[in-house]
Image 1 (tube, one colour):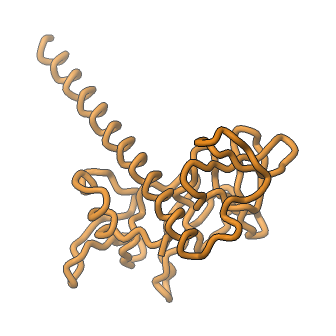
Image 2 (cartoon, helix red, strand yellow):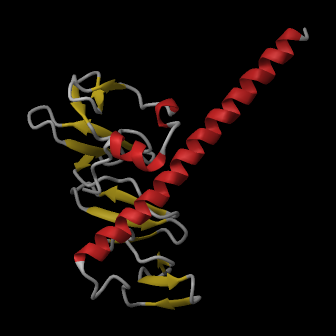
Length: 198
């Protein structure tokens, strides 16, 4: 499913360099006894094929102690969900209320909605106006509409659009991580050069 960020699937789609991207605290990558890659949460000693990297701020990936199912905790309310908080378009965040309800925040207007902004057809973006109404922008046609462009389309199309959006989001995250690693290496080399000249 879309929430299953299997490392082997990601590797097949996004290529080399994934092994070099740092894991969150308390996680390590291992080879499973079946030949694939798995991630072990060191504290709970549970494993999963779901990659724990690239979570938004204030989120952690956890593994349920009795079912071994992956879930996510939102630190601001200490609530949990099985809904993966990754893969949102720029300017959007998934949050969990103190009562456990999922909602989405459009950061430019600081408005919330229950309408998931992920999984739109190509060239479409969702936004929320200052009054809290969700609308959709077609970048190709340079138009806006109140009508959800997903309406009337079959489930297969919706799944494909969500996967395409997630892949684009993940490519951007990988590029950011690789760029950060490159900058860190350049700073380390500059410090070594500076120390050598002293």
